[in-house]
Image (cartoon, rainbow, N blue to C red; front, side, top):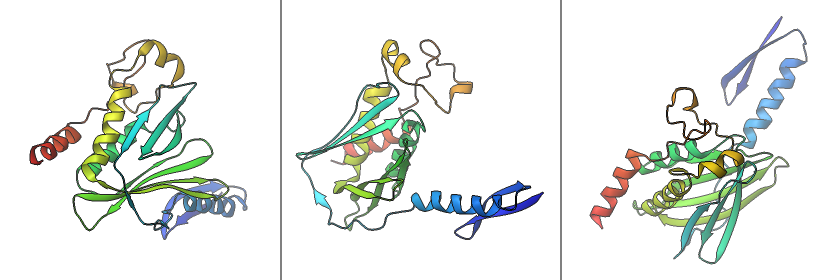
Length: 217
């Protein structure tokens, strides 16, 4: 048995054992290509815009797909989110980190492409620079937007959209159209309808952050 340590950016990410001497190098190449694909695309090629209108809507599920419709002023970007690699609880965790003052990102990996919501610092501590990047397995990369927003606006807009669709979903229709893969499925007694597990999208962390921000306005 040949043991190969698969290394990326100077650290071991996995260990492979195989009788095939070609398996280790092949896995190393595959892991590098996969993780390179997820790397930060770097600075946006255009300056951040300030917008008067910023809205997010998650559409009801349709055969395992939910569209995330992002509107900024007169422009709209539609981002299909798949139940494969279900992103919604991870998006909530990302928003909690933003509410805590972090500058971070969330990767969503639907089928065949990668979606990156990125947040970077602005000279004004109340504001952030928000980007949406799309990248395909062909290495084609597209910048959908580069916006200067109040941190509170970004968190509240995403969070309210999550609550709108997931806090009280219609079980009759959602059960047929979306395969819930909540990380709480195993130990959750809030099983709703036909074993549909509602997402835990309401966050005390985000609620407290938004309440503090509202109190200072």
